Length: 299
Image (cartoon, rainbow, N blue to C red; front, side):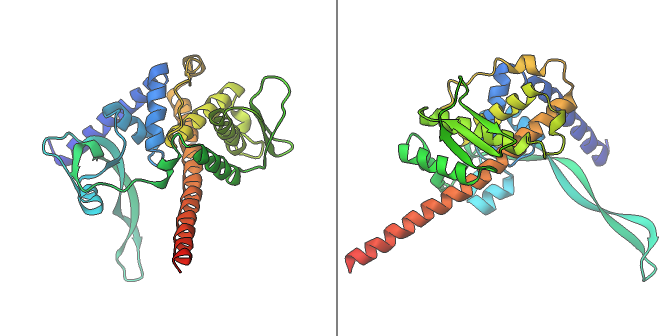
């Protein structure tokens, strides 16, 4: 079989697997597994996150063969099986038009191919540095910093106060604000804040297409984003349940389900990136201040 045909067959095989994977994600247990995977690979596409989760559920950090060697000083262990993902690549094709020199013009196109990555557990070599956000896990001061970072990156002002009824919080689209019930646990407060931030980012009236999303889908998306963001920052989400997901996804087709997964991934990625940047800057400033204070004290 020619190499080109073999590559096309391999790509079709993995895209078929991906379509089946989208359907399987919405089984209750698999959905939780998928969102946990998304919390680690929020910068990957929805499709590639599903593929990683399907093939290597315990993955925590993946990279290509050369990337592990050249960027991280680690090598893939002999015999380790690669994780298949879909990667874009650029190529040029000639057109019928001629340039000023009478030569056929070329245009750049994007194609897709099957590529391979390996998890850090499949490699050996230099230890990787840990991120400052790891300090948040289980630390009360860390929770306060996380809440402050979320507050600063919220698309609308955040208020903490009394709320009538049983709601833990709400996003008021007309007033352009988020209100969080006071007196809740730190974990519940942070999860609720991310949930309401998700509504403000995804489901506000001025967000294109939001009027076509039903209320239950909006709640599923906001809860899913809250889970992904909390899990990324090491917050305990063991009490979280996904029992409503099977009912919510029933009867929906693959493009509709994938569109929802895309919105979840993109919004979670946006929140994680902005908060990560905010926290790293704050921790860096604190360390710098401690260093300067130490020099002054020595003098």
